[in-house]
Image 1 (cartoon, rainbow, N blue to C red):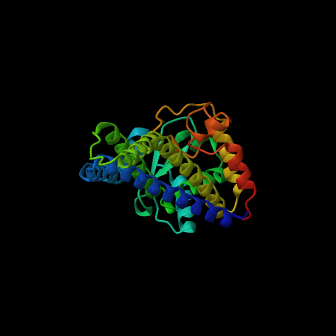
Image 2: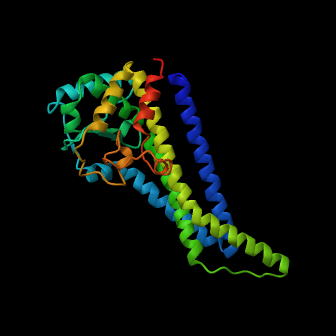
Image 3: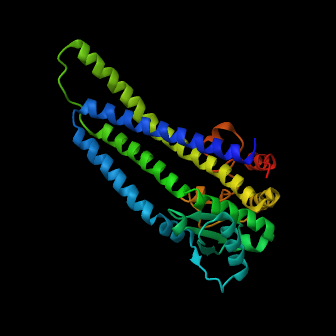
Amino acid sequence: MTLYTQAKSNTRKTWVYLTFFFILVMAVGWIISYLTNNQAILWIAFALSIGSSFLSYWQSDKLVLAISGARPIEKADNPELYRLVENLCITAGLPLPKIYIISSPQPNAFATGRDPQHGVVAVTTGLLEKLERIELEGVIGHELSHIGNRDALLSTIVVILAGTITMMTNFFFRVRFRGSDRDDRGGQIRMILMLLGLALVILAPFFATLMKLAISRKREFLADADSALLTRFPDGLIRALEKISADPHPLRTANDATAHLYIVNPFKGKDGLGWFHKLFMTHPVLEERIAALRGLKV
């Protein structure tokens, strides 16, 4: 599989996941509205979920940077880093993002921002100290891919859908089912729908979580491929991934809400290889990412 076919394949699969998500939301919503005979509550919950997610999207970059303890730098603070980012942006056809630094010995990086015009790249001091230039280019290329592909927007769509499902689940267990069962057949249909709805709302948040993680992992593969295309040197990113993963230092500002943003999981020693554990990993297994990069033709 070439770089181009892999990128197209991952993009297609992402939209398949999103389509499934939309169907799941509609299914949960229809069952709850039918059982409660009160569509007003459902629409209010849906509107609140969309509204809160919309506000979170516009302010998400500021929140992530604050949580991560990142501070902005100017070109005079690190001219070499700025030149590296500028050169890659020119090649990628992207506007220059804001650059932030996180004081931490762990080498790592992430990108945020709702679109390329509001992009942000944050790198740790450990990344600048421990990586060679060609390796750093691979990491920055990866993060610029997230900005160029509008991954923040995609993540927000998923958050909106997952939030909507969670809100619907809460309403399902709080509202009182009512309506007239004029005959036994109507009562049986209502009971079947109630059982289906109960099973669906219990399982929906679980599948929503798995879907979010699956999409996050797919975007990492795509960003790796884009970085290899941008730098024309996949080995640079391969070496960077190996160094980052092997580094023993913790990233104290990392938490579960922001871990999926980093190029490599900032939590050390938590990514076992069991299939069940893989379901809840925010990042692909390192060996799988490296194998994919080595199989690319650039």
